Image 1 (tube, rainbow, N blue to C red):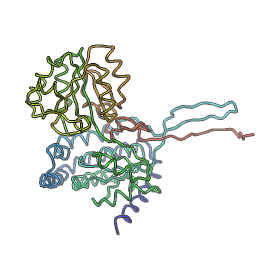
Image 2 (cartoon, rainbow, N blue to C red):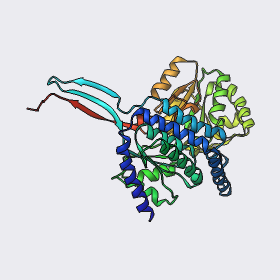
Image 3 (cartoon, helix red, strand yellow):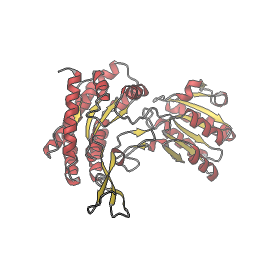
Image 4 (cartoon, rainbow, N blue to C red):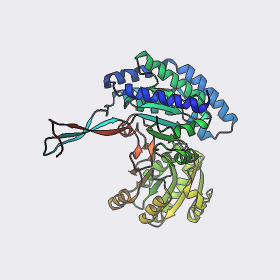
Amino acid sequence: MDVKEQVLKIGAQAKAASRELAKLSSRRKNAILEAMADELDAQRELIKTENIKDLEAGRAAGLSSAMIDRLELTDKRIDGMINGLRDVAVLPDPVGTEISTWNRPNGLEIQKVRVPIGVIGIIFESRPNVTCDAAALCFKTSNAVILRGGKEAFHSNVAIAKAMQTGGKNKDMPEHAVQLIPTTDREAVKVMCQMTDYLDLIIPRGGEGLIRAVTEMSYVPVIKHYKGICHTYIDAAAQLEMGWRIAENAKCQRPGVCNAMETLLVHREIAEAFLPRMGEVFAARGVELRGDTTVCSLIKSAKPATEEDWYEEYLDMVLAIRVVDDIEAAIAHINHYGSGHSDAIVTQDEKAEKAFLAEVDSAAVYVNASTRFTDGAEFGMGAEIGISTDKLHARGPMGLEELTTYKFVIHGKGQIRE
């Protein structure tokens, strides 16, 4: 069986499974998710063994330390996947909930009700925990899911998917509800993107190159997350100590993820007070700084920034810093160079706060907090399927509701249209 034939078969199986999933009660789905969590725990050592194969191959291929970090499955991260499954199990099931209802003068009762999207394809790179998160959220919302991970995490992904399938089977999960494409051949992605008879939605998670490639070749609707060019703006009315702590966390706590800060903006009035100490903090953490002329004069270790630096998603211990004249300049910079992901202001000025929140066009905007909180679990949504920088039909962290659509249900008593 060639790749195209194999992927089309998986698609047909997923379509059939989606019909069965639509019949499942919330209680049954929750029991299956708990069984998946139990099996992940039981298969922990096998998953770590398979993950070591991917880590060794990644180091041999010269992957950056940030990419290796995204790939590694520690006991803590496996615990996170297990807890994520259990968290999703206890979340309210949006399927079947009534969004709104109204009555027409002719006596018709019209309801708008949440329903599954159907079959969702997830194309992702590097982070094997996506296998678990994506499958859990799709299953909870009665969507069949087809997973296609990157070659970097192939062994890890297979081990996680098999554990979830085994756990689900123990509680009579519909066959083929969760499937992983068992090849890293790029032809599989092309076939998925053109599989309009079987796939209802594709969500790519990974680098900008992957997302643009999927978007350009896809006949299936795509929800995108192009880049995470996240900013923190330190306003003239900021508490400096708070600014130092937030900026350090936003850049250094986990630099290889999409909600990490990539550019720091500082109001000119406090630059001399703020930047030298900030430079010391970043130097101690091993962050390479690239700044404008003012930044380079105040932080001697900073390198001159180029125009490309303001557009860059480093996903590493590298940071661009710019001094701006006022909040209007900060907002203009963010809206021009940013990716609409997550941006923060540190200030005690209510007027500046309101301007920032109203004018920064991003999925998540923060006041006096780190951008690292843009995450489905941190938002109380359980595990997330991804973070959309689109505006239709989902924006920001995508949880359960974002994996549903709706239908109109109309009750009558014999009405006919005249």
